[in-house]
Length: 263
Image 1 (cartoon, one colour):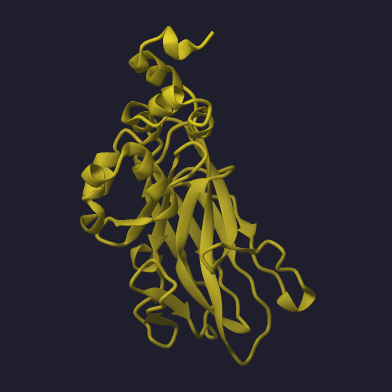
Image 2 (image 1 turned 135 degrees about the vertical axis):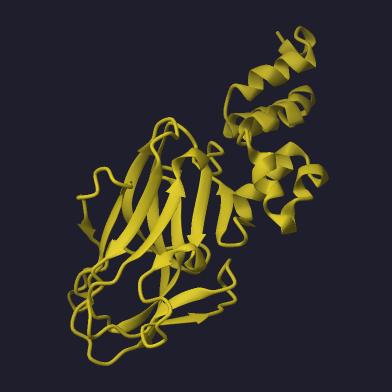
């Protein structure tokens, strides 16, 4: 029995909206009638975050997206084109599988110790960065204890989602006086469970950089830790890097990204 001959189009659209974006795309190729329902704004608005209009309206350069694209096209645009938010200090995009929210805090939005010290950090622009400026750690000799951190209100993240934080970076020019490389990270609710740390970098001379992953955008990333956002009422999520040791190359930081762990 062809359900498109039995059920009203609105009912079919409602049923499809209770599935997933992947299911909707599969149903769209079954028949012309199902395609019409599966591609409808009724379906794809359900897959978008409930506050998507507010998020997009805070991005001046992309505010016209709300009216210029269908909801399906808008969904996939946000999956493939991060938009600047929070006065350009952050970017927002969607995880493609389930439409979960992803944020990256750019270098200018991070709390960087010694950021105004030119001998330690250099602010520069790179064409491959999604932000106007990146931070380059160029020198670290007289002190090893440096901190870089991102703060995110858990209310802006998707609920009932396991998130991971990632340092997004590149290596720059070689630096003399290399000894070893080490960064210690932590991801936790500010003021709660702030004792957990993990060592990210070891000695690259011993080929222990296996945790670093190449990204499709030309950058590299390394996971800093995980956090389960249940209802978005936990407070402020703190993603921090501590105890920088001496580097053999400069470290260029684009930002810290928070996205679904299995997205």
